[in-house]
Length: 174
Image 1: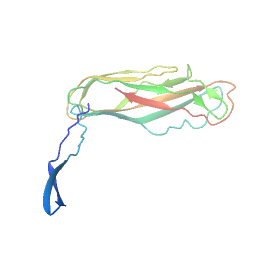
Image 2 (image 1 turned 90 degrees about the horizontal axis):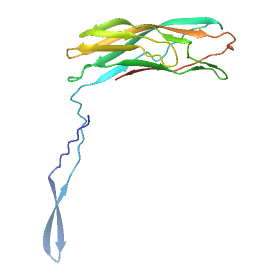
Image 3 (image 1 turned 30 degrees about the vertical axis):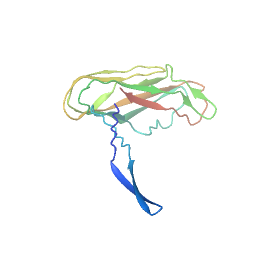
Image 4 (image 1 turned 60 degrees about the vertical axis):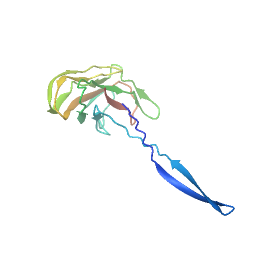
């Protein structure tokens, strides 16, 4: 929510003109628009590690690792339901691609920390759009937060050429 507050300043400037021996005073106003962003509902945010590395793996094998440190903070005063989801791009090297469809797993999250969360649902899925979901359905308190970790797995198909493959994992909350 954006609220704009305009405040006019009533600073009078006096200019003195001398015309033919008489002094004429002119008044002028100067106004300044002042903008403030007000978010009475607080904020909802998500943070996740900036990098994750499976390390080395062979073709026709599974690369497995644990991601941790994903956190949602919610200090809104009127809303307290949110859904966190995950999306991932295909893994690409300079010349090749490993499709995540059927090859990538974001495991069911394990809650590592929480405050003022009474209930939540955890899910995970496999495929192009893995969507693990953390949904608190009843939260209270001035600062609500939850942190989690999860197992990540990538099936590397037989015949995959060697190389350094990269993907983008995006955590979102709304």
